Image (cartoon, rainbow, N blue to C red):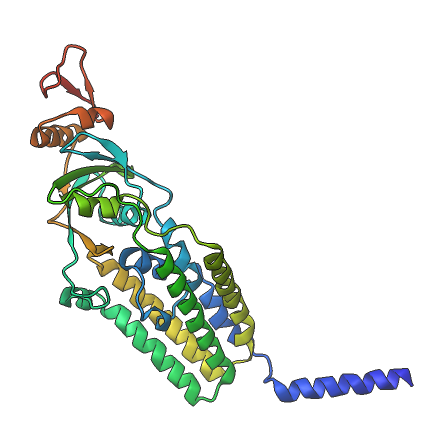
Length: 340
């Protein structure tokens, strides 16, 4: 009697599950697995351009790694010297360090300039920036098209998968926007021009010139503040939703799976190409961009001698270890022995 009751209950549950859910499709795991691919294309764009209200519509692999944009510099905080005053310090802003690593070339000096942002609004890009972001806007259109296509297919689980991705991107957009508010920049020095020399790893050298206040805004402090308890909570929710999407996609239709996978692959390529074409760093209403081509030096001594001559002082070079002053030398440039 008891066995018959369990058999009847098992048949009832099996029938209910069969009627409520479509059969499991192994291929439908691809959208979730592609989403979890550890690509940093989204994080790279965030580090160079910040966040945008269109971000929730850009769906690509590695979206759960967007909060790690502050770690792309690999923990490097390069030495930096003010050629005008002789002070030596470090570049503390991780996003700026990552940009310097991208534009720097081994054995070359790269000239950069810093200026106030020319765009009338932080949300409206200039014409050049819009042309350089065609891949980003194409990814937005691709995401919207994929959502409309899955909706037309009447694929409820596929539509839930895309909606979940949009919600995850929205959470990251809000938390990152909260954490990227301007912080400490030091004492203001209006009207003063600055000249910085940055010594990066792999013998990459960068010279940055511009107003001192703009230089401070991009090199001092940090880009993203430490997450608050609320930020950490929503960040954890976003990560859990990413992994939950793998199970959700397990019941999507074949057509929905192909649509989602195609969207992820296309958007990944579009963002990767777009990141290669970003010409400048934008942050706090300032821009940093390269001026001309990097200049190659056969020896570091040649670079040190040139910058000492141009700045008229060598104390910064001594502090950075670029030169060693002889015992008989004075505060002037004469009597300086340059090291490799």
